Length: 390
Image 1 (cartoon, rainbow, N blue to C red):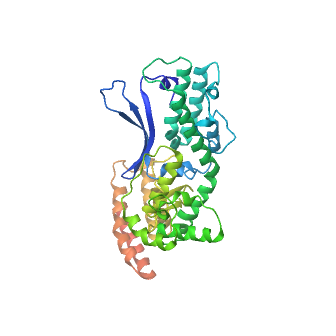
Image 2: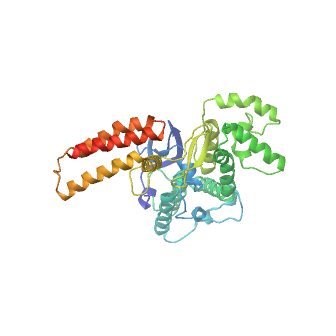
Image 3: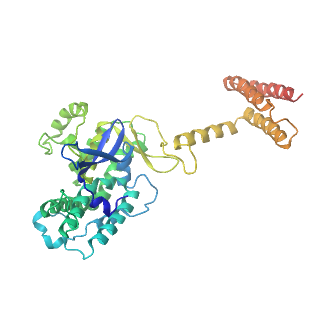
């Protein structure tokens, strides 16, 4: 949790950025050392499984939003009636906000903490937020350390923050829909086409219909070395295999917009789909050829994942429909009841004995092909189970 003390710290927060390594993703803060002879300091602020933060950004990891994502607009305390601004749109008077700078910063950080609790991907914005707030205390003479922030640095940080938030807010719903169209619908209908092919088909369809796609800005596989859209589908198809085989490398990912672009590339490169878990209704990422229908999140109130929970549920259902299992359950409950009532010693091995007997007869029952044989196996089980009580 960030507080006013983080802004007055003797260290200088150089940047906040996202990294992805070995199926783990994290957000790091990088600080300049207080002693110039020391190394740069990197602290991991947040870590999660791959694609978790992307799902979080678009509200695909929850069934209802605790805090509307649109609330992030309140981080922009200097309002400009533009979708995009530059340094010339700001002057020093824009930062004349209040007479009580400490109170303003404390309140601002309290709200930022509330946002990151729901949307941890927003930690990526803190580098710019910190620079802006540090400038406010420098401007008011509340900081006299060696790492002062000037107006130029603060205005650059505010432009970055303003444009990043404005872009995401303006396009978030369209981005979300395009992500689901590309990475979810094919898996819902069990279409086993590689994700890279689905993305190209989707773009071709929408281009033919005259629809503008955010994907055109986010999909690197349809762009040339100068980041321009390729001129023909032939060029795209010819270069796609080599692009998909290249190792992924990214510039520093220090904004929401860069993050989304990077993750779209990773999803396509790794041929991933987005699927809705059949247990919790939240989305998860899985390779297009996978048969997975359940996620690995913990089921509320248990230590089991949705995968484990579903597996147990299916197993219990199958067992409940199994006549041999029903007979076994009757004997098991009878033994357990006697132990509870005290008519059987609590150290008795009968519970283990009936389990072993059931395992022995289950293998015979499962391999039997006709109902008459199955019935005889159940009768034999009953005879052997009764012997345990004699």
